[in-house]
Length: 307
Image (cartoon, rainbow, N blue to C red; front, side, top):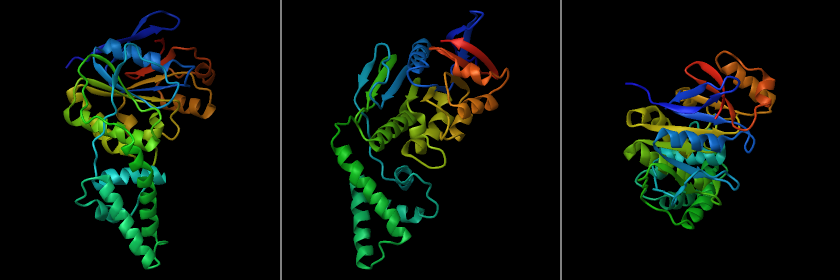
C-alpha cells in the first residue's frame, strides 16, 4: 500500500521541498522557542485527518480553527488499570503486589467501590496492628490516591461520548485538573479511539509526564495497543516533549518520524546525535536552531527543515 506523504516544509539552505510519510511522530524542543505547536498544527491540517489535542497547562499555544470538545471519561476498575494509576501515584514500579490489587478490584464497578474496599482492608490491618506492613503501605498509597482523585473526578462534568465528526483539530481542555485526572481522561480517550476510532491523530502533550520511564501509568496501559495497531485503521500518535530524558523508550521504537528542535541541555543533545542516523548534526547545531527549524529524522535520513 502506497504511503501518504505530507508536506513538512523546506530544507534549510537549499529550499527543497521536504515531505514525510504519515506515521507516528514525536516532536521535541524547548517550549516557546522551537515552534512545536505550530509544526504540529501545520502537519495535522496537511494530513487531511481529524485530530484530538489535549491542553494540559496554561500558556500552551493555540491551534488553527480549534473545535472544542468536552473532557471524555469512562471509568475502568480492572486491576491492570488500577496498577497503572498506583504506579503513577507511587512513582515506582509494582513488583509482587499484584495479587493485592486483583483482590480489591475483582467485581468492582466503580473506583469509589475499590476505594471503599481499600479503606476496609486498612481498617482491618490497623485493628491487627499490621498497617505498617508492605501490604499496608501499598493500600495506604492507593487510599491516598483515591482520596485525591475521586473528589476531583466528581468536580468535573464529563461527557461519555467521544465525538470527532469533522476534519480538523478537536481540543479537549484539561487545564486546571490534577495531573492524575488528566492522565485518566487521556487514557479513556485513547482507549475509546483504539476500540472504535479511525482516521484520527492524537496529540499527546508533555509526553514524559504520561509515559514515564521504568514505571506504569494509566496512559501507558492503553498506549502500546493504540500505536502498535493504529496503522491498520489510520490512527496515529503525535507526541510532544521538551526532551527525551525520563521518557519511556519502548513506545518510541514504533515511532518512525522524529522532529528534533532547539535544545540547549548538552546531555540531551548528545543523546539525539548518538541515537539518530547520519548525517549527524553537531551539538552547536541543535543549540542554535531557530523558531520553526527542526531536524526531520524520517526514513533513515536527517534533513534540517523549516516547517
